[in-house]
Image (cartoon, rainbow, N blue to C red):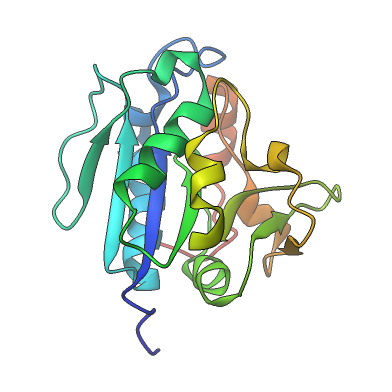
Length: 193
């Protein structure tokens, strides 16, 4: 498959505290690898050249070759601050795709589609809701950098935003609790190793 435009960056939000999980969920084993590494691998397979991991100040996520580490000192205030930190770090990009670290089945092909679609674009869930992963052009970077607290990009009310459903809704499963981790460990809707 052709490479993604090298000006498109991938921002991976890994600064959450996993309150519902009860401990740091992102470093938990999921099918032989730390949970966070599955989304990182999907971004690498998709072909992003500029990649950023946003984590909190006391993160146990190790450095990963080919990735820029971004520390969000305000991570405890909410996801909006992590989006802002990641976009500030990616200011040289023409577009960014932003994803969450607790979605191990997200498909590289879906991430590529978000990278290649013009304008702001969210992922459409089976419920009809729209959310992460999502792609954004440079024209709204300033608005993303102004996010605070738990406010995500949907809170910006982007009138020209579109939404794309993945090939399989099952690839959007996220892990919030130890029960989720256990239940999803035996599944593989994206056919990934």
